[in-house]
Length: 381
Image (cartoon, rainbow, N blue to C red; front, side, top):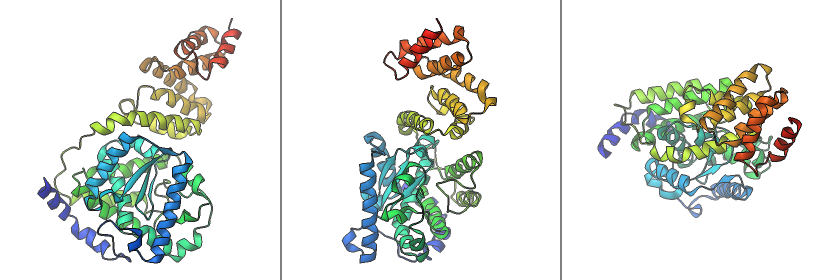
């Protein structure tokens, strides 16, 4: 198995070598300590540690030992020569985003973990972000005049909740979008790591196709994750070319571990999207062809919420159908019953509203909507 992986990795060596030779700063070849670095790079690492501390205290990190341990195992497969130097943390942010700080701290958004379809897709992102560390892109980017001149501009460069949280930090430039040269290097060198780790390289294409589809559906010129990166169409082409010279397909990766915990992440992601009013994104994701099998049984409720949040009168029938599907697929999920009860109550159809409202109270007697539901039942007497 190791020999086969080595042979497969060698198939793209010629593509990776040309990029690596252009690096302005030699890549790390092993784990390093801050004291081993020159003083300017030590300062950049210190800024990164400030970001780590801020995020740790923010309450925005998802603490899930099972998920963190599994992802740590993936990182060891991708970067066995760096041991625990690369640590991945999960951020409660619905965006499809990830970023790597110069000190090796990688942050993966909940929105990314909830939506990747398999382990190899996730490994594609992790490999890419890890290369930003090993090839010292954060330090190079932070040291450039362009980045230094622009690092005080505006909040939200990381996207979503994280961008809003870190908007005023001095260490902001640590997580700015890297230059196109750095992104291309991270794509190609990361692809080599993906192969050597035994992941399916074809899934790297699927990741960027998924990002492209969401970008277009949301009317964006590019996704937040790749806002300043090479165009997505270019990156899809690059990964297709890399896959073509990678040799025979890797045997399918087992996704059993991912499937075991992904539903609870998806539930949290859907609830977060709804709480932030992201109806369009919920509709896009939950109407994908594989959504019924991929997302938990109560997902149609959040699809209904997506239609409701979009506020388009033409969505009303689709919204009701989604709520009804949730009741059928997840009959003990109380919010779906409440949603249908409210819809019919607002339509002055108490005959249809009352059974759903009563079901909500039976399923969630202490639910947050109990008072509101009780008032509607009183009015329907």
